[in-house]
Length: 348
Ligand code: HSE
Image 1: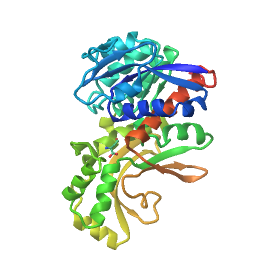
Image 2: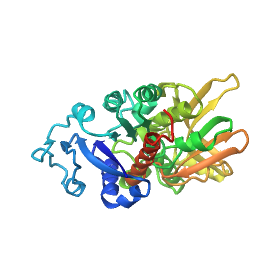
Image 3: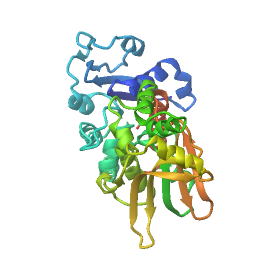
Image 4: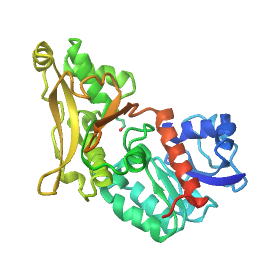
């Protein structure tokens, strides 16, 4: 059986959930024809740990927040990201650090170091994909490795790979989606009578919203995801700054109630569309949808994307768009894609 050595960059919720899956369910991976061994972990809080024979995941998962890898064999209180990414015996770098919407750092550097060192990268990080996706994919190809990022949009719900692999032979001219669970949850709770601030507080309590929910409510989280979908699926090279973006911060309880009275539902919609002249334009904005629209019935923190195809009409996929296990599954699906590449089933 093939063994892949992993380096986990960032040891927060998502990479911890992946480590738990590897610790608890080796049979899940054996059934796919490979074994996963974590040989390095780096984290701003814990520091770094490199053990070529495989890290004892039960032991590191049991370490309380605030402790350090310093003192363990191969451990340090310094994250040493560059050294670990370039020199650890990892085949696959699993990048799950904080997303910077401004410059994508430090994740962009992590991805570059890995690809230039001939290591595959799987990531859930929207920043590098939205800002430099095409460049990093080319860098991977020129180094004979893969750059995979299914979890950058809708966590483990397969959107990018599904559109690439399952919609072949169809002309795709637009994608439209509910791509932020927090804002969709908030709009739904406003339909139940809550005010915007009360609904945001509830979304934070439930762990959907970020500690600072500005990116969720103001639309900038969706802006990154729309840029990724436009570039992946409509063959363009948009920067997030070119996506005209408006969030739900100005929607009032009265707006929501009035719309409901007319059979309409406010949703924060991200859209990329090819114009008749062949240009791709992308927007993020609140839209009051008619009840029979494919996205009108998407409630709570669920996400959905509707592909506008020529032969099938709208094809809609819905599922979770966040969550630690759900996002860790996106990394698993990326590792499966790397395995297919390594075994010769997919060309660079
Ligand atoms: N805070 C985001 C959401 C999670 O609410 O959808 C992942 O981007």
